[in-house]
Image (cartoon, rainbow, N blue to C red; front, side):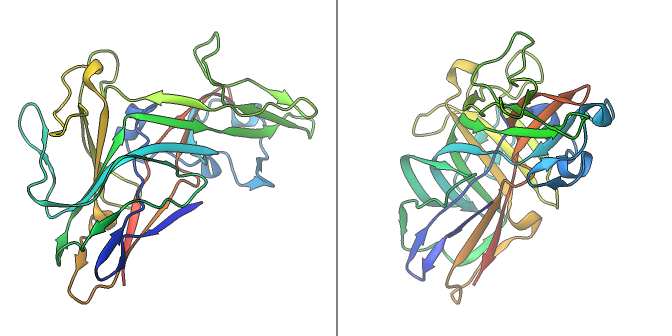
Length: 295
Protein backbone atom coordinates (compact mmCIF):
# COMPACT_ATOMS: atom_id res chain seq x y z
CA UNK A 1 0.00 0.00 0.00
CA UNK A 2 1.01 3.61 -0.23
CA UNK A 3 1.77 5.91 2.64
CA UNK A 4 0.69 9.40 1.77
CA UNK A 5 1.17 12.50 3.89
CA UNK A 6 1.33 16.23 3.38
CA UNK A 7 4.65 17.78 4.32
CA UNK A 8 3.13 21.23 4.07
CA UNK A 9 -0.48 21.34 5.22
CA UNK A 10 -0.63 24.99 4.34
CA UNK A 11 1.68 27.91 3.82
CA UNK A 12 2.42 28.25 7.54
CA UNK A 13 2.82 24.71 8.83
CA UNK A 14 4.36 21.39 8.02
CA UNK A 15 3.16 17.94 9.00
CA UNK A 16 5.43 15.18 7.89
CA UNK A 17 4.83 11.58 7.04
CA UNK A 18 7.98 9.83 5.98
CA UNK A 19 9.46 6.42 5.49
CA UNK A 20 12.68 4.96 4.19
CA UNK A 21 15.16 2.21 4.71
CA UNK A 22 14.99 -1.49 4.96
CA UNK A 23 18.71 -2.10 5.04
CA UNK A 24 18.77 -4.46 7.96
CA UNK A 25 18.70 -7.98 6.61
CA UNK A 26 20.06 -7.71 3.10
CA UNK A 27 22.79 -5.07 2.92
CA UNK A 28 24.63 -7.01 0.21
CA UNK A 29 21.55 -7.11 -2.00
CA UNK A 30 20.75 -3.47 -1.32
CA UNK A 31 24.18 -2.43 -2.54
CA UNK A 32 23.74 -4.20 -5.84
CA UNK A 33 21.43 -3.18 -8.66
CA UNK A 34 17.76 -3.29 -7.76
CA UNK A 35 16.81 -6.92 -7.00
CA UNK A 36 13.93 -8.54 -8.89
CA UNK A 37 10.40 -8.28 -7.60
CA UNK A 38 8.83 -11.64 -6.81
CA UNK A 39 5.90 -10.88 -9.11
CA UNK A 40 8.46 -10.62 -11.91
CA UNK A 41 10.79 -13.45 -10.89
CA UNK A 42 8.05 -15.92 -9.96
CA UNK A 43 5.06 -14.56 -11.87
CA UNK A 44 1.85 -12.74 -11.12
CA UNK A 45 -0.27 -13.64 -8.09
CA UNK A 46 -3.81 -14.98 -8.23
CA UNK A 47 -5.86 -14.11 -5.14
CA UNK A 48 -2.64 -13.14 -3.38
CA UNK A 49 -0.89 -16.45 -4.15
CA UNK A 50 1.85 -17.37 -6.59
CA UNK A 51 0.92 -20.02 -9.14
CA UNK A 52 4.31 -21.76 -9.42
CA UNK A 53 5.57 -24.67 -7.33
CA UNK A 54 8.93 -24.84 -5.55
CA UNK A 55 10.14 -27.19 -8.29
CA UNK A 56 9.12 -24.69 -10.98
CA UNK A 57 10.88 -21.87 -9.17
CA UNK A 58 13.91 -24.11 -8.62
CA UNK A 59 17.37 -22.62 -8.47
CA UNK A 60 16.82 -20.10 -11.26
CA UNK A 61 16.00 -17.46 -8.63
CA UNK A 62 17.31 -17.27 -5.06
CA UNK A 63 16.11 -13.82 -4.00
CA UNK A 64 13.27 -11.42 -4.73
CA UNK A 65 11.26 -8.67 -3.05
CA UNK A 66 7.64 -8.82 -1.98
CA UNK A 67 5.10 -6.94 0.13
CA UNK A 68 5.46 -7.07 3.94
CA UNK A 69 2.45 -7.47 6.21
CA UNK A 70 4.21 -5.29 8.77
CA UNK A 71 7.07 -2.82 8.47
CA UNK A 72 7.39 -0.86 11.70
CA UNK A 73 9.90 1.92 12.26
CA UNK A 74 10.43 4.61 14.91
CA UNK A 75 11.03 8.10 13.50
CA UNK A 76 12.97 10.76 15.41
CA UNK A 77 13.74 13.48 12.89
CA UNK A 78 13.15 14.52 9.29
CA UNK A 79 14.72 17.19 7.15
CA UNK A 80 15.23 18.62 3.67
CA UNK A 81 18.71 19.57 2.43
CA UNK A 82 20.25 21.56 -0.38
CA UNK A 83 23.28 19.24 -0.43
CA UNK A 84 24.29 15.74 0.71
CA UNK A 85 24.35 15.94 4.56
CA UNK A 86 26.69 12.95 5.02
CA UNK A 87 30.13 14.51 4.87
CA UNK A 88 33.23 13.08 3.22
CA UNK A 89 36.22 12.18 5.37
CA UNK A 90 37.10 9.43 7.79
CA UNK A 91 34.98 8.74 9.64
CA UNK A 92 31.94 9.95 7.74
CA UNK A 93 29.87 12.46 9.72
CA UNK A 94 26.39 13.95 9.51
CA UNK A 95 25.89 17.71 9.17
CA UNK A 96 22.70 19.79 9.09
CA UNK A 97 24.47 22.92 7.84
CA UNK A 98 22.68 22.73 4.49
CA UNK A 99 19.41 21.35 5.87
CA UNK A 100 16.16 22.50 7.40
CA UNK A 101 14.71 20.26 10.11
CA UNK A 102 11.06 19.56 9.37
CA UNK A 103 10.19 17.35 12.35
CA UNK A 104 11.70 16.22 15.63
CA UNK A 105 10.29 13.76 18.14
CA UNK A 106 11.34 11.49 20.98
CA UNK A 107 10.06 8.72 18.72
CA UNK A 108 6.97 8.20 16.57
CA UNK A 109 6.23 4.58 15.69
CA UNK A 110 4.79 3.88 12.26
CA UNK A 111 3.80 0.68 10.48
CA UNK A 112 4.49 1.61 6.88
CA UNK A 113 2.68 -1.46 5.58
CA UNK A 114 -0.64 -0.66 7.21
CA UNK A 115 -1.13 2.94 8.21
CA UNK A 116 -0.88 6.61 7.45
CA UNK A 117 1.26 8.40 10.00
CA UNK A 118 0.55 11.69 11.71
CA UNK A 119 3.74 13.33 12.92
CA UNK A 120 4.40 16.52 14.89
CA UNK A 121 4.09 19.75 12.91
CA UNK A 122 6.89 22.12 12.09
CA UNK A 123 6.63 25.70 13.28
CA UNK A 124 6.52 27.68 10.06
CA UNK A 125 7.54 26.19 6.72
CA UNK A 126 10.76 25.27 4.92
CA UNK A 127 12.34 28.30 3.23
CA UNK A 128 11.82 28.58 -0.50
CA UNK A 129 14.76 26.75 -2.02
CA UNK A 130 15.90 23.84 -4.17
CA UNK A 131 16.18 20.71 -2.02
CA UNK A 132 18.30 17.96 -3.54
CA UNK A 133 18.28 15.60 -0.54
CA UNK A 134 16.07 14.56 2.33
CA UNK A 135 16.96 12.67 5.48
CA UNK A 136 15.26 10.64 8.16
CA UNK A 137 16.60 9.64 11.59
CA UNK A 138 15.31 6.29 12.82
CA UNK A 139 15.85 3.91 15.69
CA UNK A 140 17.97 1.17 14.10
CA UNK A 141 15.41 -1.54 14.90
CA UNK A 142 12.73 -2.71 12.44
CA UNK A 143 9.55 -4.68 13.15
CA UNK A 144 8.54 -6.98 10.30
CA UNK A 145 6.11 -9.74 9.36
CA UNK A 146 5.24 -11.54 6.15
CA UNK A 147 4.35 -14.73 4.31
CA UNK A 148 4.39 -16.31 0.84
CA UNK A 149 2.02 -18.86 -0.69
CA UNK A 150 2.95 -21.01 -3.70
CA UNK A 151 1.54 -24.22 -5.24
CA UNK A 152 2.30 -27.76 -4.05
CA UNK A 153 2.34 -29.57 -7.41
CA UNK A 154 -1.11 -31.10 -6.98
CA UNK A 155 -3.11 -27.90 -7.35
CA UNK A 156 -3.08 -27.14 -3.63
CA UNK A 157 -1.47 -24.26 -1.79
CA UNK A 158 1.65 -24.25 0.35
CA UNK A 159 2.21 -21.34 2.73
CA UNK A 160 5.49 -20.17 4.27
CA UNK A 161 5.47 -17.68 7.15
CA UNK A 162 7.97 -15.54 9.00
CA UNK A 163 8.99 -16.71 12.45
CA UNK A 164 9.91 -14.62 15.48
CA UNK A 165 13.13 -16.62 15.92
CA UNK A 166 15.52 -18.43 13.61
CA UNK A 167 15.08 -22.14 12.98
CA UNK A 168 17.74 -24.85 13.16
CA UNK A 169 18.92 -24.02 9.63
CA UNK A 170 19.48 -20.35 10.44
CA UNK A 171 16.45 -19.14 8.50
CA UNK A 172 13.28 -17.58 9.85
CA UNK A 173 10.70 -19.38 7.68
CA UNK A 174 8.26 -21.95 9.04
CA UNK A 175 8.82 -24.15 6.03
CA UNK A 176 5.84 -25.48 4.02
CA UNK A 177 2.40 -25.63 5.63
CA UNK A 178 -0.75 -26.89 3.92
CA UNK A 179 -4.44 -25.99 3.82
CA UNK A 180 -6.12 -26.79 7.12
CA UNK A 181 -2.87 -26.26 8.95
CA UNK A 182 -1.63 -23.02 7.39
CA UNK A 183 0.95 -21.12 9.40
CA UNK A 184 0.36 -17.66 10.82
CA UNK A 185 3.09 -15.12 10.14
CA UNK A 186 4.87 -13.99 13.29
CA UNK A 187 6.40 -10.61 14.02
CA UNK A 188 10.18 -10.58 13.78
CA UNK A 189 12.68 -7.88 14.65
CA UNK A 190 15.88 -6.81 12.93
CA UNK A 191 18.57 -4.65 14.49
CA UNK A 192 20.85 -2.89 12.03
CA UNK A 193 24.17 -2.30 13.78
CA UNK A 194 26.67 -2.55 10.89
CA UNK A 195 26.87 -2.26 7.12
CA UNK A 196 29.86 -4.62 6.93
CA UNK A 197 29.23 -7.49 4.52
CA UNK A 198 30.42 -10.16 6.95
CA UNK A 199 31.68 -9.56 10.46
CA UNK A 200 33.52 -6.42 11.45
CA UNK A 201 31.87 -3.02 11.61
CA UNK A 202 30.98 -0.36 9.05
CA UNK A 203 28.89 2.70 9.92
CA UNK A 204 28.53 4.09 6.40
CA UNK A 205 26.38 2.83 3.54
CA UNK A 206 27.62 4.65 0.41
CA UNK A 207 25.46 6.17 -2.32
CA UNK A 208 23.73 3.41 -4.25
CA UNK A 209 21.32 3.68 -7.16
CA UNK A 210 17.65 3.02 -6.47
CA UNK A 211 15.12 1.41 -8.76
CA UNK A 212 13.70 4.17 -10.94
CA UNK A 213 16.58 6.60 -10.34
CA UNK A 214 18.12 8.58 -7.53
CA UNK A 215 20.48 7.35 -4.83
CA UNK A 216 20.26 6.34 -1.20
CA UNK A 217 22.94 6.39 1.49
CA UNK A 218 22.96 5.90 5.25
CA UNK A 219 24.96 6.34 8.43
CA UNK A 220 24.80 4.57 11.81
CA UNK A 221 25.19 6.89 14.79
CA UNK A 222 24.85 7.14 18.52
CA UNK A 223 21.63 8.54 19.98
CA UNK A 224 23.27 11.69 21.31
CA UNK A 225 22.25 15.22 20.33
CA UNK A 226 25.02 15.49 17.73
CA UNK A 227 24.26 12.10 16.17
CA UNK A 228 27.91 11.11 16.50
CA UNK A 229 29.05 8.47 14.02
CA UNK A 230 29.15 5.04 15.64
CA UNK A 231 32.56 3.36 15.87
CA UNK A 232 31.29 -0.06 17.01
CA UNK A 233 28.11 -2.11 16.90
CA UNK A 234 27.43 -1.36 20.55
CA UNK A 235 27.33 2.38 19.77
CA UNK A 236 24.87 2.11 16.86
CA UNK A 237 21.49 3.35 18.09
CA UNK A 238 20.26 5.53 15.22
CA UNK A 239 20.09 5.10 11.46
CA UNK A 240 20.21 8.21 9.27
CA UNK A 241 18.84 7.52 5.81
CA UNK A 242 19.60 10.07 3.08
CA UNK A 243 18.18 10.03 -0.43
CA UNK A 244 18.05 12.20 -3.48
CA UNK A 245 14.60 13.71 -3.72
CA UNK A 246 12.38 12.57 -6.59
CA UNK A 247 14.82 10.07 -8.06
CA UNK A 248 17.52 12.67 -8.46
CA UNK A 249 15.29 15.59 -9.50
CA UNK A 250 15.33 18.28 -6.78
CA UNK A 251 12.23 19.41 -4.91
CA UNK A 252 11.55 23.08 -5.61
CA UNK A 253 9.76 25.02 -2.87
CA UNK A 254 8.81 28.54 -3.90
CA UNK A 255 6.76 31.28 -2.29
CA UNK A 256 3.83 29.99 -4.34
CA UNK A 257 4.13 26.43 -3.00
CA UNK A 258 1.15 25.52 -0.83
CA UNK A 259 2.13 21.96 0.00
CA UNK A 260 4.51 19.11 -0.51
CA UNK A 261 3.07 15.61 -0.65
CA UNK A 262 5.09 12.48 -0.15
CA UNK A 263 4.10 9.01 -1.33
CA UNK A 264 5.81 5.91 -0.08
CA UNK A 265 5.08 2.36 -1.15
CA UNK A 266 6.27 -0.94 0.28
CA UNK A 267 4.18 -2.95 -2.19
CA UNK A 268 6.33 -5.55 -3.97
CA UNK A 269 9.61 -4.00 -2.76
CA UNK A 270 9.70 -3.67 1.05
CA UNK A 271 10.28 -7.32 2.01
CA UNK A 272 13.24 -9.42 0.90
CA UNK A 273 12.82 -13.20 0.57
CA UNK A 274 15.67 -15.69 0.16
CA UNK A 275 14.83 -18.97 -1.60
CA UNK A 276 16.59 -22.35 -1.56
CA UNK A 277 15.47 -24.91 -4.13
CA UNK A 278 12.40 -22.78 -4.77
CA UNK A 279 11.32 -22.57 -1.13
CA UNK A 280 11.34 -19.38 1.00
CA UNK A 281 13.87 -19.77 3.83
CA UNK A 282 14.50 -16.23 5.06
CA UNK A 283 12.46 -13.02 5.32
CA UNK A 284 13.88 -9.53 5.90
CA UNK A 285 13.63 -5.84 5.16
CA UNK A 286 14.63 -4.05 1.94
CA UNK A 287 15.08 -0.40 0.91
CA UNK A 288 12.26 1.62 -0.57
CA UNK A 289 11.88 5.26 -1.44
CA UNK A 290 9.51 8.23 -1.25
CA UNK A 291 8.33 10.44 -4.11
CA UNK A 292 7.58 14.12 -3.57
CA UNK A 293 4.97 16.23 -5.33
CA UNK A 294 4.56 19.97 -4.76
CA UNK A 295 1.21 21.73 -5.13
